[in-house]
Length: 214
Image (cartoon, rainbow, N blue to C red; front, side, top):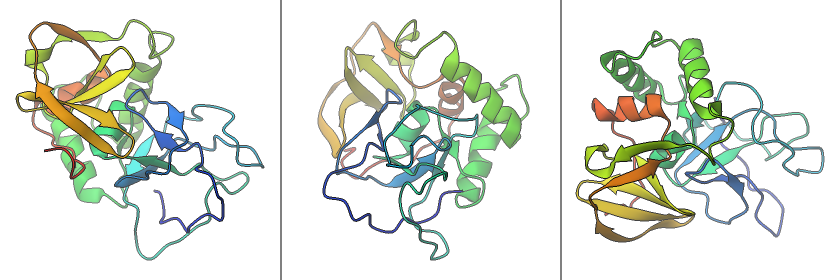
């Protein structure tokens, strides 16, 4: 569970904004959700690793009035996502504490999709971790699917530009929001959203989207 974060006394953005490619960048835009994938930073607050452990979650930014300073030494690294669709594309799932209703809906969709492991947190985390790491990196041999078959909330890549699928459109992702839409094309595309999450979206799980997703 991620707790609400106190404003950090720094003048430049930290490298804790997550892209649909699952990369960590420095950008002042925080977005709608927080998350974590373990302690990724050193004592100076510099990112030293892309992940630590299999628990990758997506949380609300405010929960029970809890507050914490960002990037405390030895503590988990607070990450920020534009919206839940970005978090899912990056390989995170809803937090079971601060987003219990969404977590339950995600688990129900996981079962409905007929995925090979039970919809229990530890099993889901291991399954998602395998999808994130196989093959060696998310930069090679991504899923390729017909664009027409993709559910709302899935992300595709066109080179280094990520697009979210929404109805008959593709929305260009930017750290601060979605850019102008273009029509969903025919043909195949590289899919950023991990295969198990794609299955969950296909059977009806609907992520919470940024207001610019119009």
